[in-house]
Image 1 (cartoon, helix red, strand yellow):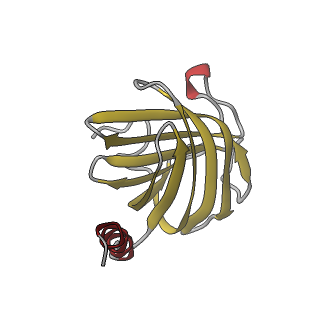
Image 2: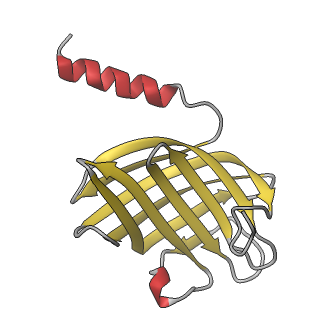
Length: 161
């Protein structure tokens, strides 16, 4: 087996070994990669947001869905959170480390689509992002399925940690 083949096999096995709910993502642009991340979700009360986090080591993806009032299975357009909250809408953020550089990104356009809402959430996302610290843009896309939905908690804005 070649070295590249061995690395690809190792990456596939690492993704297959992640148990429980996950966020799966891939990105291209000023950086390229893929990730399978342990996931959690919380509904932060009337009007939200619904927060979904996927994290493994230094790699993380966060989605915040802001409905008009109640959470529905629907498409939510991505907005730039530095310009305020748009309802209905969603914010997307990502970070990872590559070559001794931390990539911190925020979504500016795209979609978060919730396909299932209830005791668990499922859906997909795609966004064009810009660097917060690093220069460059990345297109990121992915999915999440069957993430148990907590009611409130430490992941909600304003909650004490």
